[in-house]
Image (cartoon, rainbow over all chains, first blue to last red; front, side, top):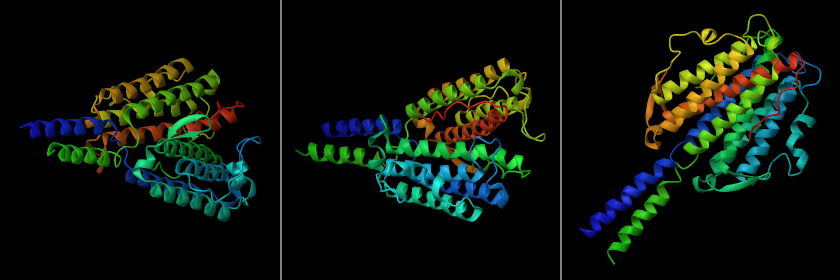
Length: 180
Length: 175
């Protein structure tokens, strides 16, 4: 009987403690990133070549620069979150290497942005569930690896969102919101 | 001694099974929504009263309409995710508040409070339940994630509304 009560106690502990952490799984996150990639691709496809240099106001990023910034940030966040070497380079300016070095044509931008999603997704898969829970430093902040992938997701949503209005101003109807 | 192997087995099981699911916690999610609320408030504050009716192109939503759509959808997706009744279920998003700066700001802030209290009101067990939404299987927790993405997307769009009105948008508040 002692054994049974111990069993129940440990089982209760298992059931009681695991749900407080049981939320987004790694495979769910990968699926969300795969969707995000398709979603951003629809935006890149929708903008005609001559819209890639378009800026709604002169002081801000062009459509191509927004998208290349998104790609740079995908690399930067995935590099920090996974610990995998950034294929764009380790130096600090890698933060905006694509934005500064890639030719802002439709073809080159599209390829760079798609590559950034593929690389991020590969680092997400390669990070073990245990590693995902590790707390790391990002700048001066403490954040889990998983949490940092979440920040990366918000970042690309924010910048893709901005480019919706670039499309509208170019007379293009944006792709429908692809939340699913 | 029999006791220990059993304890050890169960303990190993606990530790081993947890990380497969242990990613983003409820309290982290609440923290993210609290930040999102402050972030959107900065946008609402940055736009002057006369910009609330501004549309970059005539066929799309005004700044106020973008923000009220964001608020309406916060209620809608939260209601789906939590089971809490949606107070605006039968109201068109443009009608949930007057399109003034003050009324829009209040409606948007209230919608975030609705999300946050619904999220806090669910047990971890409930958050993991799978529900149906638009023929898809999704966890309640996942619905809050979709709602989060939705508000990020629409706030993002309004960045360019601010720019076109000559306003420097609030800095990106990812943290």
